[in-house]
Image: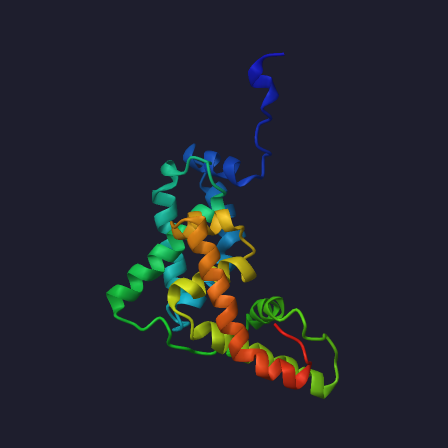
Length: 213
C-alpha cells in the first residue's frame, strides 16, 4: 500500500467535494452549498444588520463573492468558516456603503422564520424551563427578549463573537478564522459578551428562577 492510500478521499457529499465539483464546472454542486448554508448565513447577517429587508440581498452578495473566490478555498479551514468570514465582511461593507447603523433593531419575532430564532434564544437561555404554563411561557418570552436586547446592545465585535459561539456553535479556532483575529481575542470577546448579557438579565433571572444565565 502506498503512502497516498492512507489518505481517504472526502465523502461525495462533503463541502470539499462540492467545492471541487463546482470548480470542475458543476453548477448544481454550488447550489447544494447555497441550500445547505443559506439560512445560517442569513441568520448571521441578521445579527449584524437590523434592517431585515437587507438580509437576503447581503446573503446573495455573500454567495456571489464566495463563488467568485472559490478557487482561493484551500480546505485548510472548514468551508462554513470560510463562508462566514465572507458574510461578515460583506455585511460590514454594505453597512458602510449604506451608512446604516448596525444596531437598528427590527424585531425578528414578526418573521415567519421565527422558529429558528426562537430556538437560538433557548440556546442562550438553558435555564429557562420548557413548560406550557402561561406563567412559564411569559417568563421565557420575557427572558428571551431581554437576551436579544442585551445582544443588540453589545459592540459589534462582541456581538459577532458570541453569536458565532453560542448560536452557530463554532469553535474558538473557527471563530478566530471567521473574524480574522487571534484566539485569545476571541476568548476575551466572548467572555466580555457573556458578562455584559449576564449583568443585564441576572436581576430578571433572580426574580423569576433564582438562577444565573
